Length: 310
Image (cartoon, rainbow, N blue to C red; front, side, top):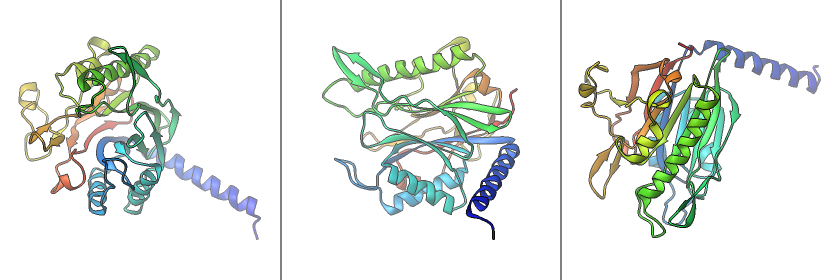
């Protein structure tokens, strides 16, 4: 009989071999972001617990995308987070590596699930700014992780959820979102200063339109500017076109606001120039799923990449 120590060593070696094989097999990969709208296991304040039907639709949406790396916004407690991770694994999508960031908002959080190992973590949870003489904190913080796709390719991912359009008494929500965008841009500039060719993905719910000042602040300009992947529906339209004006007539909304009965693009996947060289526009899209609104007021988006520096 093998000793317990020998058995443990054998299991560890087997796990390592499987892990190495997994890394070598990754020639392409998919990155997605999804605001899962108050994914809470318990009610909190005005936020209700997520219903079983809504959770099932969220899982269905994620499983339809089959992402290798997934950023989540409006994630509830760690119990809810691990419940979702386990449910996805049960249904064939194993994303064993994770990051969970708690910011000033105690109800909903930013989180990351990954098929690939997370090599480094740089959570930003305590950034603040002054607005009209009053100090505010970035509501949800920013997740920043370095992900190793295979032995020769890695990238940095920043997952964000900027201040919502919901009005509050303390300050103007648009001004707050702009200040959060400025802080996020500082994080981006720091990555680019350390390595101008860095493979960087900045994604999440930015709660604003593409021509807004917060988005223009985050995207930046010139060599340090980010590239907007602008995912759109796979609904029979032609694939990405060289004429950007035709591309901009594809259906790209990601959020429905029932108060105004409006559909807007608030969720983005932005790329550094280094990362954009590996981007596959033809495999980048908004998920159009029947009864999508049962799961969330947002639709998930996904971008695909070649796992080799170009």
